[in-house]
Image (cartoon, rainbow, N blue to C red; front, side, top):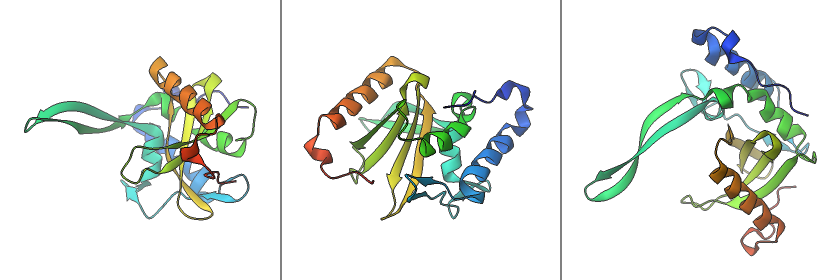
Amino acid sequence: MLSEPIDLSKIDATKIIDVLYGFFHRDFVAERTYLANNIYINPRSHRKDEGKELDFWHLTTREDKEQVWENGQRVTRSNGRYPDYDRGSRIEWVKLILTNHAHESIKLFYHRETNRKRSIRLYLWASDEDFVVILQKLGRADSFLVTSFFVDHDGKRKDFEERFQNYLGGDPDLQDCEWF
């Protein structure tokens, strides 16, 4: 179902972001993409950085964070976002996973986040390929791409498997949360 990742080593390093943005623009800006034929994947083009949608940056870069102590408290500090070649090389997979969300190789589950709003997000996890796409609902028939990334450690795989099993098990915290 999924194509080979893009070989970024064959692209001039100064052009990688523009090449990747071409795929994002084709799949989410120039054409409308829908999940389950009725939930619009809104690229939120009004939110840009360096002329590109913020959602694009979350599909192609990774935030560098560090834990530091400030005023006696442990806090997380961001050192910025940097290209993530494992994410970027799989940017075409995002639309493929969305349009093939019911494929047997995709583990679909909802999870209540620990963020301030305790948002329920939809995870589409291509577990055999170690790649996940995460969506959040915007309204009745809109959603946005929170992120997508290559799962690169066993702890995250275990966490996703637990979330998947929790959803399948009928977690009461996720009662009637399905979008479609």
